[in-house]
Every structure is written in structure tokens, then in C-alpha cells.
Length: 508
View 1 (cartoon, rainbow, N blue to C red):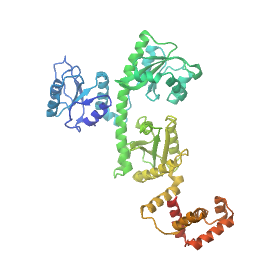
View 2: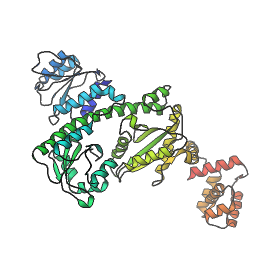
View 3: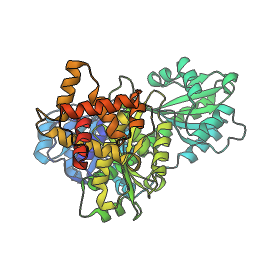
View 4: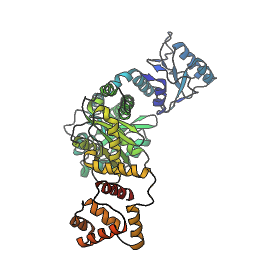
């Protein structure tokens, strides 16, 4: 079910703004109708598209007659008190940015309102591959459709004579980094972000690249993606018009695909949060997510990219949720600055590690990722799995450059961290063996605390402790004897040894 609040939030991304305060954002929307000046009958629907209406008050009158909860009207329409009239009738008046065409807005609204429930159940986007084939036939060249990140969304079936760069793009599902750098150096991406005119990209034999003609796919001022055609010289005449028309058609497809994807992510995210926070309906929620009745692991992941705030983690979340539910092993949510993914996984954490590695491989080179993998758990134990994933993530943050931390391998470090946290929660002792030895080391330049730590970690083995300290075993023996004279250690008591280990961990 799609609400008016959801419609307003989505359309806000395309420059649509409410004229006045919205009376009830929780209204459910089921239908869309378009005003037709040539039709004498009054259409009835929840959302009215007042195409061609230049008076906002007239748009409100039409919405009242249509029993609509919302009406969309061109932003340049005159007001004439429309805001007050709309409030009186409980209607939301939404002003459409002049830079966004009605055809694009129609695509978004119809996709959101009419296809929302189908999308939630796993329905995929429209067939862009068929459209890529149609464009290829018109322009007489191989076609790829790419998103803003140069990831391949669709491609034409006729790729037999494709150059090496095109084959790498299709097989890797994105433009390779060397070719991306070449396009960036030539100003291709800058042109796409600022111009609606198709651009010819000259060949580059050293990159295995034949000539290309590229047209931006735009919704108003926003770049959604691009259409690329392999050609040895710039397209002209009918072929150029075919590329322009094809880019317009792709715009509607990408807009509807984005709406479908947004709905899918919203529903999935809310259900995953329920599982991670704990719910008595965990089995039912698991079924709604399309997850098998299996054991799971929770993956917690954070991403950073130089000085870009939030951009990297949003990219990671986009990658984690790319594709519809049936095509992905896990289900994800973005909570704060962390992506959480619930993965069906047995006792072996290797599939979770592989999943993280594949996600990282699809991110730009300058993005750094930290990840933690919780222990295996039943669906009702996912809140504990999330805590373990968070603890593993925190441990990985302190170990940059290493493999993601999984709970199975790092449980001892995590348990010590828990004990350290518990010990730090109270008032630290003003006296005690560790505090007194540390004070003695500071006053007399001795190394009793490191020696005690090495002895405990070596479980009393003088040879191992001396090797860790790089001193003679007799030196360790002497220091241990001197420590026992200075403070009461009671190293023959197991509880005391455990307490000393925790105290040393807190002192780190």
C-alpha cells in the first residue's frame, strides 16, 4: 500500500513540492487519473494529474470533483487562493518543477501508485533489454544502458563484434576503471552531467575501445544514467534522432525501476530491522522477506571515502540491495552509518566472507570498508547475532587492511572486550596489584607490568615469556620474584589470574 506521505517523499526527489501544508499524509492511494480538457466526463481517482491546467485553484476544483487526495499541477500555475481552498477540502496540491516533463512525472506516479504492491512481492522492472535491442536496431550499433555509477543496467543482444572494452563492461557488469578514467579525462562525465546533447567519444585502441556515441538519461536536472552506442563516427540524421528518442524512453524505464527499487528497499529495510531488534513474529517476517527457514549470520558493514560524508555507505547499501529479492542471498537495512545484512549461512562463515568480498569489489577503489560477521544463529537469535556483528565490526576498525572479522575466529577477543567494558563501567580501584606495579614502573623505570602480562599470556612458561619480552629467562624469573615481594599477586589462584588478565586488558 502506498501512502500520500510516500508519494510526496519520492516526488520531492524530482523537484515536486507541496503548495501548502498537507492535511493528511497518511491517506492511502490506489488510483491515478489524468485531466483531459477534451473529455466532458469527470474522472475519479486518488491522485489527479492536472496536465495543461494553469490555475492552481482550478486544479483544486478538479481534484474535489475527482474525489482525489492529491493533485499535481505545473509550478508556474497561478495561485488565486488555492492553498486555503485545498486545505479546506483536505487535498494536497503538489507543484511540478518546470524542468521535469509531465511524461516523466506520469511514469513515476503510475509506477509508484499502481505498481507498488506488485513491486513489494518481488516484481521486477520493465524490460530494458528489449528497449536496448530496439535502440540498437534504430541506430545500427551495439547498445548498453548504464546507471550513474557506470554499472550496466541492460545491453542489446547484438554484441558479436563488440570491442574488448565493451565485452569487459558486459562481463564485469560495469565499465572498467581504466576506461572510466579515460572518459573522465576526456570530460565525458562532465558533459553528461551538464548537457542534454549526445556526445561522440573518439576511439582509443590502447584501451580496446572503438568510437562511442553517448546520450545522457535525464529527469529534469538530474542525471539518471546514459545510453552508449558503438560507432566509428558521430551519428547523424535519423540515427541521431533514434538515440535521442531512445534515451527519452530509457528515462521512463529508469524512473519506474527506481520507484520499484525504492519500494522494495523500504519494505525490506523495515522487516530486517524487526528481525534485528527482535519480534515474536520472526518466522513470519522471515517468510515475508523470502528467506529460507535456515540458520543465519548478521553482517555489519561500514564504508568511508576520503572526505565524502555518507556517500560511501550509501553506495555500499545500494550495492547490497541491487537486484530484486529472488536474486540476492541476503536482506539488508541501513541503520545510522552501518549496513546490516541477514545472510542464510551455516556453520561455515566462508559464504559471508565471500559476500563481503564481492560487495567490496564492486565499490570504487578509494572506498575503505570495515565489516564484522556475527555467529551462526536461529531466526529468533538475530538480535544477538547483530550484537556479535557490531562487536566484530568494532574489532575490524582497529585492524585496517586485514580480512573482515568473524565471531567464530575472534570470540576470545570479543569476550575480553566485553569483560573490559564491564570492568570499566564501575569506579576503577585506587589500589590493587596492577595499579601498584604500574606506579612502580613509572617511578623506577622498571618493566613489571609488561613482564606480568607476558607471563600470564604464556601461562607461566618462562621460556615463552622471555622470548616475547626478548630477555633471558632468568630476567623474567627475577622480575616475577621481585613483583611478589612488592605486591600480593597470588598467582596460584585461577580466579586471581583471570582477574589480572582482565585488569591488564582494561589498562591497555
